[in-house]
Length: 103
Image (cartoon, rainbow, N blue to C red; front, side):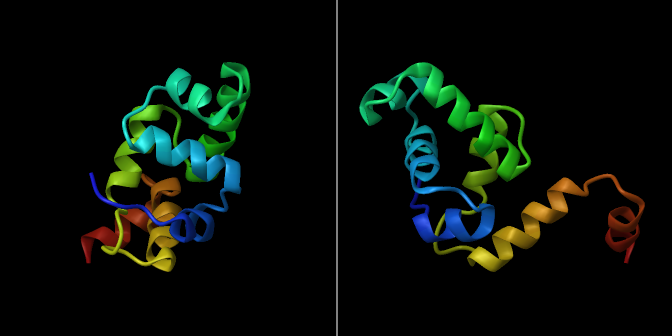
């Protein structure tokens, strides 16, 4: 799939080191259970971390998270651009966003 930089994830989304490790494993194709096992944490702890990852990335499901991350594979976008795009995703559907798209 390509590489995602830990720095990109931290800068763009404010993820902690443990959230980054979980995110990278999920992005690499592991299930949440597999990732939890590989990281030596319980499934419930992984679920809790995933909820925080969803909040920080503005996503609600694993598939949505993976799609978001796929758009940001290194070196395609800088961390600053990722953050700007993330903020745009959170505003999707607002009048100001729709107006800027028409220009």
